[in-house]
Amino acid sequence: MQTQNVHLLVIEDRADNLNELLTWLREDFGYQEIVTATTTSEALEKLASPFDVVISDMRMYDEVDAGFTILDWVQQRNLSSVVIIFTANESLEDCYRAWKSKAWDYISKNPPTGNAFDTLNDSIQEAIAYLNRWGNLPNQQWLEENQQDLEAKYWGQYIAIANQVVIESADTEDELYQRLEERKLRRFTTTIKKIGDLRPISELIQLGESDKLEFKSSLQWDVREKKENRKLQLNTLKTIAAFLNADGGTLLIGVEDDGKIFGLSKDLDCLSNRNLDQFERHLVQLIETSIGKKFLPYLKLRFVKINEQDVCGVYVRKSPQAAFLKSEKGIEFYIRSGNSTRSLNIQEFHDYFLNQTKKLT
Image (tube, rainbow, N blue to C red; front, top):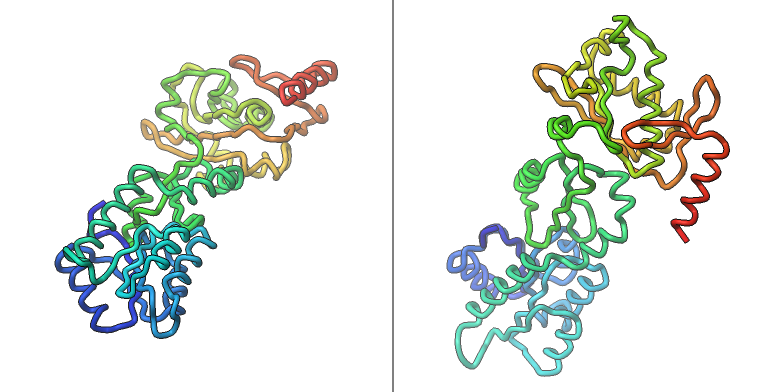
């Protein structure tokens, strides 16, 4: 990211000082994304938006310890911003207190030697270099603490985190950066993270079936009989349930066992509207009815067109609780066994959960 994209909040109550500082920042150093505040209350209000760097005066007309109020506000709320105190009333006591309050720097407006604005610019650049190398610790900690909730909501997506809040999300990293640029939200203190790993369907087809990857020619079209057969839907549901009970996996619908593309056109012909939206709604309804609505957060459906044919990818995460399948036979429990899906009888079910319990202890 270039200097002109660094987002600054400048807090200064004297108009002459503010104008001089803005001139240096914009014309001499090239910073363009600058927001100003002339009172402490205005600054706290504007800190509701994320900033890379906050440059704050220490003494202001409305509050004698304004700089410390800003520092405390940022620390108490774990904001991502770097705070630089830029003051004409420097003191050893204030400097020590600012460091304890996690200020990035404490700079005098009236240094005995050199130019204060050059020093300020050097400090901003050092802060940005640090953030680029090490990332933002508060965002990282928040991400780790909320990993499960984020996976449930954003699984397979790229997210942007600022001030421990998801400010934007997208299916691809390029799309996410574009959205951030459009909203002028791309900042050094913004943490970019991909939640979960959804490999492209075209790549998965090349891998072939495995314990975590299965192909189905169709959802409900009988390829051999060349007619609709709703009983075939159960095969898809069995695989989804098994992946939920295992370590997750991906089911591709519209792909034959040998990797050839069969597509979804025949399945779509079985639906009234004959479109992918209805196909998705139909499949989701089947999952809700036969496995349970509570398992939907662990699934992600995607559609791609390959060789002019639509293919559906059902990405499944491991569920923290057992997923049972309701069918005409009753309640069944499925697991993955190599490249296949199989149900467990009562004894196998008992042994399975006994082994799972031992793994957790």
